[in-house]
Image (cartoon, rainbow, N blue to C red; front, side):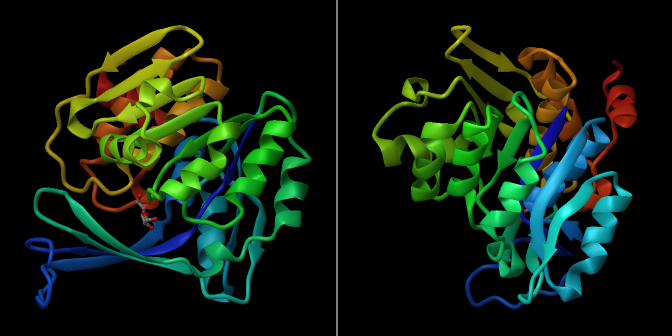
Amino acid sequence: MTVFNLGSINADHVYNVPHLPGAGETLAALSMQTGLGGKGANMSVAVARAGSHVAHIGAVGGDGLWARDRLMEYGVDTRHIAQSSAPTGHAIINVDQAGENAITLLAGANFDIEEPAIDQALSIGKAGDIFVTQNETNAQEFAVKLGSKLGFRVCYAAAPFDASAVKAVLPYLDFLILNEVEAQQLEAALDQSIEQLDVADIVITLGGKGARWISKADGVDQHFDALKVTPIDTTGAGDTFTGYVLSALDRGLSMGQAISLATRAAALMVTRFGTADVIPDLKEVEEFAGL
Ligand code: RIB
């Protein structure tokens, strides 16, 4: 089976700072590094590192061919990553001493993905494959409608949160993943509780408190504890969680087993500084969690 991911690809410029800068403040960073990122790319790398075949659908500029090459090195199927005339997307990421971050994005080529390219990519999939997207590209609504029509299990990670973007894709979703803040924002935007949404499976990630799974089909509302770790950098932990859940489902694990594994992968991820380049592989996660 394949996980198809319509997702962003960014150059992440990550600054280790004494604290997150305030308005009007000029702050000296302690160190800086540039690496591969983007919520989409992070999820694809996590799916690949967790042991599944993942086809990434996206775009980079001429300045971002290194990012496409790196995704390929990490085991991602990059045939559906186009080269755009726009510059590659990038992110300025400040990470404080407690591992919290503040991110500024420039979408660039991530908003230059053509619908025929999505059509072509998904046409090689088959019913039962997984399709995932987030909110850092264009064409999400087109893609979820197509994925749903083709019988894919359609998943959406509602980040960065935008109420109108979630509303547009919601009718086509089988699986929604969002964090605690995004869940509250969605409830406010829809004037409806999360439990009332007509989505088969919903997972709310709770950071250091774990995760919650709500399943309409199974009548489940279950909490999963997180492993206790000291965070270095929380950037990309949610993306790692999503990639691991989807890979585990793709490999035939139950949703409960998938979430349990993903909470462990995310816990290990927050002990590392950086994004796609440091997402752990399955062996590392199993050793870390004593599985
Ligand atoms: O979720 C973390 C990601 O958000 C970073 O890699 C950055 O590129 C932004 O997309």
